[in-house]
Image 1 (cartoon, helix red, strand yellow):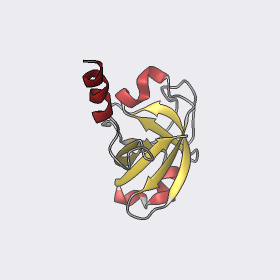
Image 2 (cartoon, rainbow, N blue to C red; image 1 turned 90 degrees about the horizontal axis):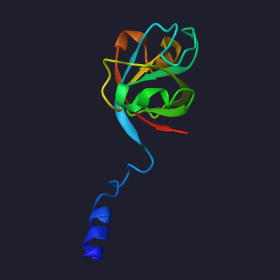
Image 3 (cartoon, rainbow, N blue to C red; image 1 turned 45 degrees about the vertical axis):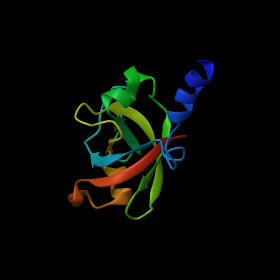
Image 4 (cartoon, one colour; image 1 turned 60 degrees about the vertical axis):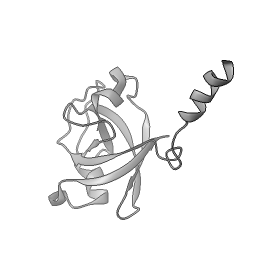
Length: 117
């Protein structure tokens, strides 16, 4: 019985490749200001807003994330400063300057992989 209990946990291990990248989703951008983390930011800051579930009630405020554009491999580091009510888990809403580091603002969205540092 104990072996069956522990074997259930072995089956729940992350799939290969998920150890490196904790999240994958859609990147968008927004005009920043006073964020949910209580700090006022400007559009030139490299910041992100997380989905409500990933934001975890503010416990991720101030954490840094490493973001990679899935299509180009371009990467950057940003700081969590806000929540994105319309985002799904894995999505990132970025400051305009951060989004522009990866893509032209006219593109509107692109796919990212990212992880907490």
